[in-house]
Length: 95
Image (tube, rainbow, N blue to C red; front, side):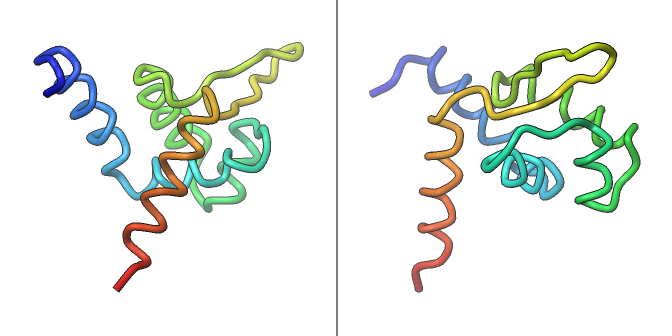
């Protein structure tokens, strides 16, 4: 049985992934690194809305960024996030 601390961390991760916009962002970043402008255009949202969601995802260590000049490029924090999304897709696709 996981510790209470681990259970809380898991619940926070799943909570972060409970929002459709954040799932779409994770999915978009699964294949490539993107800036806020590209994510906004791809998802049909404002840069402000994307930035807000990215801040939450960064707080849960689901995404990371690197700066190139004034532009921040976002990617998944590690392959575990990609694997988690893939496993969840398989789970909801069965049936």
